[in-house]
Amino acid sequence: MKRLTHIGNDGRAQMVDVSAKPVSARTAVARGKIRLQRHTLDLISKDQIAKG
Image 1 (cartoon, rainbow, N blue to C red):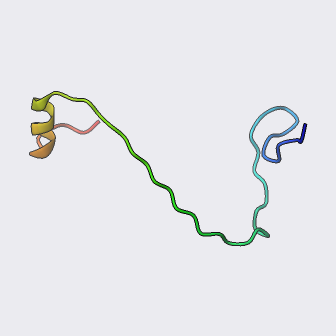
Image 2 (spheres, rainbow, N blue to C red; image 1 turned 180 degrees about the vertical axis):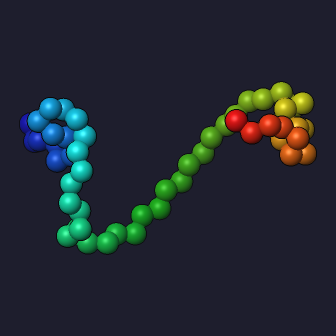
């Protein structure tokens, strides 16, 4: 099996030099759903909920 370039011999992720790689244009799209009570949504909409 081919060895992964970003994984060291100890199995941990490691930094690799990618400065010689050509620039590429990429696009990412994400979607999500959240479920919350109507009261919570109202508080968020009115900026009346504590952060965190």
